Image (cartoon, rainbow, N blue to C red):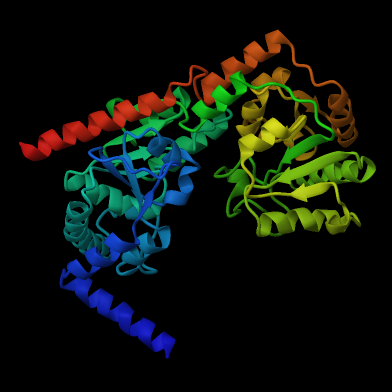
Length: 454
């Protein structure tokens, strides 16, 4: 019965969309769109209202903006964002051809119908909710594409706060340029990136013009840097080591060496399969032999990622549930974990720099597949290995962790270099990212209001 009801509702929604009857959609979405509230629960009045697309992808940035009390932020649940697209998208929608149909009548027809509906729907929705601006978390999110494009066309600016900003070397940079080229032209108002390298990539790809891009650092780093500056070392009863887990294709995603692989190689024959196994198993073995130390493995998420960790451990006759001083935590706050840790390990992530500026010993494994010539230009921060502790073998990896638990000092000169690299790739140590983001958004919103009133 439920399936029948859902089918009726689905076809009813499609019929209403077909005849451009939008008010039922406006009523529903006005109710399911949620507000991001500041910690004190007090909603500011008279400030620009921002609608966030694909909100779970912002990694804390929405909270930073709303805490500034300079904006109200609403968020549309991602599944409801997809429901609109599902009224029109089907298996004939092929990406990246969707971004430039080149006379493909089928795709053009789908786009025309979808955008005609979105134009009517969003115009009324934004009027109802008093939306001043729409934001997305990355330029490559296909589900945001039409929503952002139409928002811009009806005079409500679409700004992308691009979160994917880490580029290692020449080949990775070239690969990123080629991927962005597939998306043709940016169809919004402005893109914000963390560093100059990412800005150059967007420009060289032809995706956006220089005046459409701003380099403003990373929003969520201001608070982290302020905490670091006021951080006092506290003597703890138990020491803690954290391994920020990495997937098989860390740093090579989108390259010819990782085609068809999403994070983990299904047949375990692509990417850093041996490195993943040896690092995680060595880390777990250390936990087994050091009961007085807490060991934490932090994957980005659970599910398949956790299963891969459990698989390599079982393969080496280790049952994780029997190790009391080892935890796998995928939902814990990254920065809190860095502060609590005495030693940090990881590979292929900016979290290495985040731990580095907190004056933590940072261990990077550099053996197994990463030594293969084809990967040499994909090793993240390879030119700055001197600011980390580099392990050239499994045994050295184990030994460095033990040594660093007893000696966690980082030299003054090394810290200066760490700050410089962090500023180059992530954000300014001056903690001014938030103010810059606020200023830019306010400027764009103000300009759009003037244009709409002309």
